[in-house]
Length: 101
Image 1 (cartoon, rainbow, N blue to C red):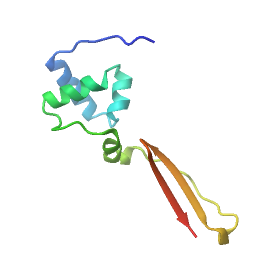
Image 2 (image 1 turned 135 degrees about the vertical axis):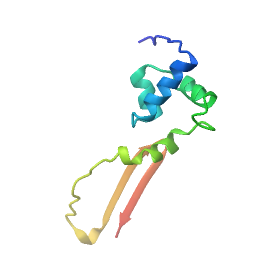
Image 3 (image 1 turned 90 degrees about the vertical axis):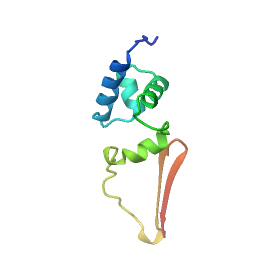
Image 4 (image 1 turned 120 degrees about the vertical axis):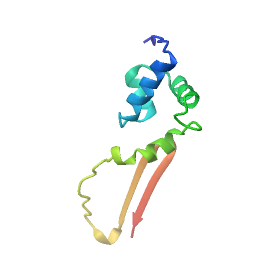
Protein backbone atom coordinates (compact mmCIF):
# COMPACT_ATOMS: atom_id res chain seq x y z
CA UNK A 1 0.00 0.00 0.00
CA UNK A 2 1.39 3.38 -1.00
CA UNK A 3 1.40 6.18 1.57
CA UNK A 4 -0.24 9.44 0.54
CA UNK A 5 1.98 12.42 1.30
CA UNK A 6 0.37 15.38 3.02
CA UNK A 7 2.06 18.73 3.29
CA UNK A 8 1.19 20.65 6.41
CA UNK A 9 2.05 24.21 7.36
CA UNK A 10 3.55 25.08 10.74
CA UNK A 11 0.03 25.91 11.93
CA UNK A 12 -1.16 22.52 10.70
CA UNK A 13 1.62 20.77 12.62
CA UNK A 14 0.74 22.76 15.76
CA UNK A 15 -2.77 21.34 15.43
CA UNK A 16 -1.40 17.82 14.94
CA UNK A 17 0.85 18.17 18.00
CA UNK A 18 -2.08 19.46 20.06
CA UNK A 19 -4.28 16.56 18.96
CA UNK A 20 -1.48 14.12 19.74
CA UNK A 21 -0.99 15.56 23.24
CA UNK A 22 -4.63 14.77 24.07
CA UNK A 23 -4.79 11.42 22.27
CA UNK A 24 -3.11 9.25 24.91
CA UNK A 25 -1.38 7.33 22.11
CA UNK A 26 2.28 6.66 21.44
CA UNK A 27 3.90 8.58 18.58
CA UNK A 28 3.99 5.35 16.57
CA UNK A 29 0.29 4.63 17.13
CA UNK A 30 -0.81 8.21 16.49
CA UNK A 31 1.23 8.59 13.30
CA UNK A 32 0.03 5.25 11.97
CA UNK A 33 -3.59 6.16 12.62
CA UNK A 34 -3.23 9.61 11.04
CA UNK A 35 -1.06 8.49 8.11
CA UNK A 36 1.89 10.64 9.22
CA UNK A 37 5.59 9.92 8.91
CA UNK A 38 7.18 9.54 12.36
CA UNK A 39 10.37 11.31 11.32
CA UNK A 40 8.33 14.32 10.18
CA UNK A 41 6.39 14.26 13.45
CA UNK A 42 9.61 14.27 15.51
CA UNK A 43 11.15 16.99 13.32
CA UNK A 44 8.15 19.32 13.63
CA UNK A 45 7.82 18.66 17.35
CA UNK A 46 11.46 19.65 17.79
CA UNK A 47 11.12 22.73 15.52
CA UNK A 48 7.98 23.95 17.27
CA UNK A 49 9.37 23.41 20.75
CA UNK A 50 7.24 20.42 21.71
CA UNK A 51 10.31 18.52 22.92
CA UNK A 52 13.97 19.37 23.40
CA UNK A 53 15.14 16.10 21.89
CA UNK A 54 13.51 13.11 20.22
CA UNK A 55 12.09 10.63 22.69
CA UNK A 56 12.96 7.00 22.16
CA UNK A 57 9.98 4.65 21.68
CA UNK A 58 11.02 2.77 24.83
CA UNK A 59 11.02 5.93 26.99
CA UNK A 60 7.73 6.95 25.44
CA UNK A 61 6.15 3.60 26.36
CA UNK A 62 7.37 4.02 29.92
CA UNK A 63 5.80 7.48 30.07
CA UNK A 64 2.49 6.08 28.80
CA UNK A 65 2.63 2.95 30.94
CA UNK A 66 -0.66 3.84 32.64
CA UNK A 67 -2.49 3.55 29.31
CA UNK A 68 -0.94 0.21 28.33
CA UNK A 69 -2.16 -1.96 31.20
CA UNK A 70 -2.56 -5.65 30.41
CA UNK A 71 -4.56 -7.72 32.89
CA UNK A 72 -3.10 -11.21 32.99
CA UNK A 73 -5.87 -12.44 35.29
CA UNK A 74 -5.28 -14.87 38.13
CA UNK A 75 -2.17 -17.01 37.93
CA UNK A 76 -2.77 -20.57 39.05
CA UNK A 77 0.14 -22.64 40.28
CA UNK A 78 -0.50 -26.37 40.06
CA UNK A 79 2.51 -27.37 42.17
CA UNK A 80 3.50 -24.55 44.53
CA UNK A 81 6.76 -26.28 45.50
CA UNK A 82 8.12 -25.89 41.95
CA UNK A 83 7.92 -22.07 42.03
CA UNK A 84 6.63 -19.65 39.45
CA UNK A 85 8.30 -18.19 36.38
CA UNK A 86 6.89 -15.35 34.28
CA UNK A 87 8.47 -13.95 31.11
CA UNK A 88 6.96 -10.92 29.36
CA UNK A 89 8.44 -9.53 26.13
CA UNK A 90 7.79 -5.78 26.20
CA UNK A 91 9.17 -5.00 22.75
CA UNK A 92 12.27 -3.13 21.72
CA UNK A 93 14.39 -5.98 23.03
CA UNK A 94 13.17 -5.52 26.61
CA UNK A 95 12.17 -8.67 28.48
CA UNK A 96 10.72 -8.77 31.99
CA UNK A 97 11.57 -12.05 33.68
CA UNK A 98 10.19 -12.80 37.17
CA UNK A 99 10.96 -15.94 39.12
CA UNK A 100 9.57 -17.08 42.46
CA UNK A 101 11.01 -20.21 44.05
